[in-house]
Image (cartoon, rainbow, N blue to C red; front, side, top):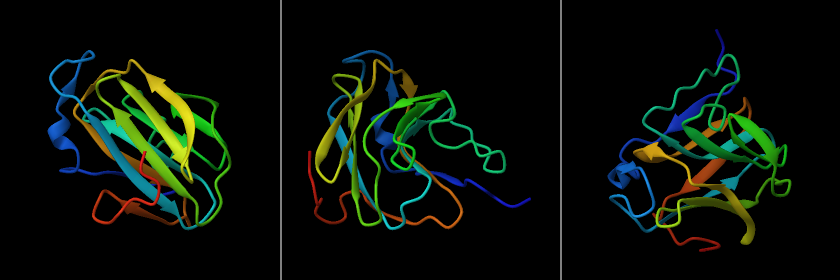
Length: 153
């Protein structure tokens, strides 16, 4: 079967974040990465924990599982099993900032440096990682700090 919505959860990037239970519970700080969308189609970028499971054939990716949280700039929604309106529509060449604040237990996203507001708050996770799902034909470039951020938070 063809893979229609492949997902990536990066092992080793962010794995030291450890389990999240409550604010101040074991780790803290702010974690950030950027994604340059090279195409303007269906992609969901954000975070997933160790319990994340996906099904690319059925189109279930990051944000479609209760252990993942995503921003989808194609449909202008945020996702954690269910969707809600959020943010603006991205275009090819736009930069998406992905921020996790472990002290406040907040996740927020940025579009070309503009803060889109809190997307998720009070979540619980067991080891959290950067994660993304891209539809067929979509392309993105990720910066986990290997180069300067275009729009640091």
